[in-house]
Image 1 (cartoon, rainbow, N blue to C red):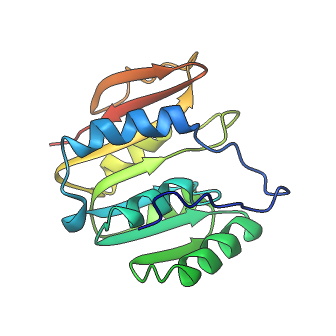
Image 2: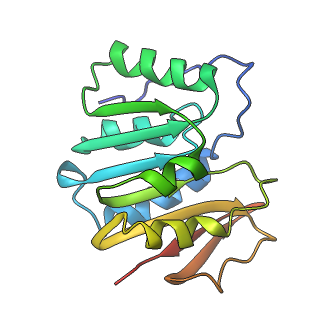
Length: 172
């Protein structure tokens, strides 16, 4: 739906967007596993909505995007309205606090926290504790390549793309 459109978020947002190369590699992996039209997605630390809009343009059924920064939340809401993405809901809040309170479950959860956050390894634990993944669901955590998450519950594999890596988690 947004094919060929380059979104230009405000330059003053406190983000580090996923690189195009890493995003393309991620979606090559996800395309082989999910039918996006029936997918519910939770985008944690959504930032500029780079991945939120990628999921929406692939017609994901429902997307909840969460970020702590008002500018990011406002940008994602405004852009979702502009492109008539009715399946996107955006919430402002501290992801770690919200994870403790969340109910419901998702087919796919993507987390792209700031790389300097010390509690990144808690994300898989919290997702499992709250039972936020549907059976067969997948949690993907983007992190700095020098961080190792292979001792966290549900860990399956890590794919490295330069300084960024995606670690994949599944829970039974």
